[in-house]
Image 1 (cartoon, rainbow, N blue to C red):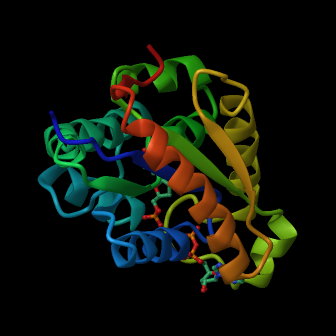
Image 2 (spheres, rainbow, N blue to C red):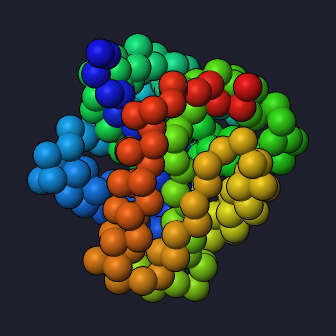
Length: 212
Ligand code: ADP
Ligand code: 2DT
C-alpha cells in the first residue's frame, strides 16, 4: 500500500496576526506527537528569485508591480517539486503565507483586480486547510510598531484585509477563520484541532489543484 500523504496547511492573515509564531508552534507540536511536519514560508527569500523579492521588500530595489507579482508566484512554483515530494513522503507542510497573500497584496494596489492577480497561481498544490488569523487593526497595533519593509503601513494593511475577505468567499478553498486576538496558547489549541482533523482526512484524498 502506498504511504499516506502529508497535509498542506497554510496560515494567512495580516501583519502581526501571529502567523510565524503559530506555524512554529504547530510544527513543534506535530513533531512531538510523532507526525512528520516541516515549516515553509513564502516568500522563500533564499533562492535567486527570493533574493530579488527580498531586496524589493527591503526597498533596496524597485520593481514594476506586475513583475514583482509574477516573481512572488514564480517563487512558489519553483518550490512545487520539493513540496510535492515531501507531501508524498508523508510530511505535513505548515506554510506561512501562500498564493492568498500574493493575490491580496497585489490586488490592494491601484489598477489591479483580484482575478488577474490569482491567475499565475492557478494549479499550485491546493492547501487542504487555510487558516486565516483574524485580528483587528487596533489589536495588531498593540503588538508593536510596523517595521520598515514595503507594505507595512496601516492604510495598506486595511486594503489587504478587504481583499482577503473577498478571497474567503470562495467555497472551493477550505477556509477556517481563527480568532487571533486570543492568547498564543489558545490560538495554538484552535489551530491544532483544525490541523489534526485535516491531517486525518488528507490521507484519504489526493492533493488538489488551487483555483482550478
Ligand atoms: P506575523 O507572522 O503574522 O506577522 P508574528 O508571529 O511575527 O506575526 O507575531 C507578531 C508579534 O505579535 C510578535 O511580537 C509576537 O510575539 C506577538 N504575538 C503573536 N501572537 C500573539 C498573541 N496571540 N497575543 C499577543 N501577542 C502575540
Ligand atoms: P513576511 O516575510 O514578513 O511575511 O513579509 N507578499 C507575500 C506579497 O506581496 N506577495 C506574495 O505572494 C507573498 C507570499 C506580504 C512578506 C511580505 O510580502 C508580501 C508581506
